Structure formats: structure tokens, C-alpha cells
Length: 345
Image (tube, rainbow, N blue to C red; front, top):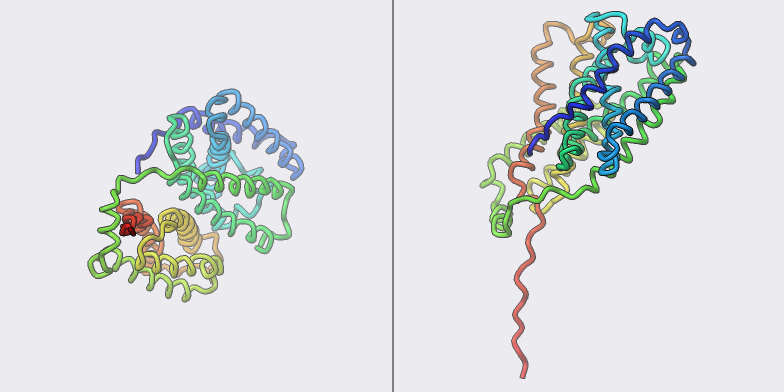
């Protein structure tokens, strides 16, 4: 998979979040929740207008350019929040975590911001760069979609049912477009034409004729998925994994045994992004000082905890890489030769 060049224009525009957030931190009106939501809406509106005026041709070519550009700006904001909450910087986003989204002050909220500010940010720059070069970004988009949806699935219940459920601010309603827009974006990404593979019909037929014992990589992945499924059952309290990840593991095992499951490469990318985001946030929050001591992983168990969860996160990425590396086994089998009918005289 070719990684497109990063969009320099979007990088410069998104880095404007640094001086802007520093200045807003000293505006007195932002000491009230209503002031925060109004100012946030105003900034997002002005940012959208600026992106439209600077990149009109790119937006006409693909409207997701504007979506990724706005999200790149908010990713920088999230990174500033995480760095501020961990004490690496001061004077930037204290007003927002206090009067906007206090949930982001939790350990899990901090690591959601780290992931958004680093991984999502790089994906946004790569995808906007691909749009500018008129190249495909479908694989990157599928990975981002899974990662973004997983963060939302945890973020929303965490706000509504968690420790800060009694402190929901008006800015919480700004998450509505941040939920609806990715759903629309995901549909557009899925509808994009897949990058054609160089697999000939003979290559597809040969790959799909091989038994499982002649495909050691697939056999190793199946063994991994079985152990990962048991690990998911062991962590039954993580309901998102139980309801979504566990069924996917079962379907992935099926697709690695029986050829022609053309849906696996796409969904492997989606779930790789989802599990990567979930495991990063889970591992970081479980060892963070802001997590209550009774829920924190003891220091003498850090090594085993880290290795087990790292392997759990690595496996779906290896599965996605395998699907992209040699996709012939998952392609639809070529049609057989037409039957020869004897002429009847």
C-alpha cells in the first residue's frame, strides 16, 4: 500500500490551533460553559470557511477533504489537551477541560486525545495529501473509520454514564456532528473503488486451491485468533469487544479457511483501527496515575500486562497486512470456462 505525501497546507492550517488555544485560554468569557460552546462553534465555522476558500477545487473533487481538514485541526487541539493534562505544557486548553468536556481529564480521556492527536492527525494529513494528488486513500480511510468509531463508542457512554455524567456541558452537543459526519464519511470510503490487484485468474485459482496446511501464515493467524477470542471472553467486562470483536474473530477464522471471502480485507482494516485505538487507550489508562489505585495495574504486573495487550493489538494488524499482501485467496473465484454443448443434428 503506497502512503501518499502529507498535505502541507493542512498541516500549517491545523498548527494554528497552538496560538489560538493559547490566546483563548485568557478570554474571560470562556470561563462559562455557554461561552465555550459558542466560541467553539464560531471557530469551527470560520475554519470551515477558510478551508473552503483555500482548497475549493480539492473539496469539489472529494468533499471529505474538508472533513479531514477540520478534524486535523481538532486533533491538534486534542494533543494540546493531553499534553496539558499530563503536565508537559500549561496555559493552553485548561478552559476547555474545565468548562467544555471535563471527561477528558480522566486517564482514558487523556489517551483518547493522545491517539487522536498523533495517529488520527497523521491519517488526516495523509488522506488530504492523497486527495490533492488524486490518489486512492481507501485503505487509510477504512483504518481511520474503525479507529474513530471505537473512540466514539467509548467516549459517548463515558460522558453519559461515567464519573462526569453530572457535569455534562453544552459542548457535549458538538459531538453530534462528530458522530454523524464520520458515518457519512465511512459510507463514502466504502463506496470508493477498490485498488485493482495484480492477481491473474490463474494466481487466484492456485491460491484458493491450497489447503490450510500449505498456508502456514494463515494457519498461524487462525491459531492466534482462537487464543484472542478466548482472551476476549476472559475480559468479558469490556462489552464492546464482546459484542463486536468476538464475532469478527469467528468470521475471520471462517474466511481464512474457506476461499473467496472478499469482505475480509476491508473489515480487517476497520477492526485493526478499532482494536489499535482501544488497546492504546486501555493500556495507557490502566497504568496512568489518574486511574484510581484499585483499578490500576500493579507495577509488578506491568510487563505481563503490556505484553499480553500488545499481542492482542498486534494480531489484527498482522491480519490486515496479510490480506493486503497476498489478497488472491480472498478474491472471488474466476468464472469457470463455458460448458461445451454438443451440437444436436
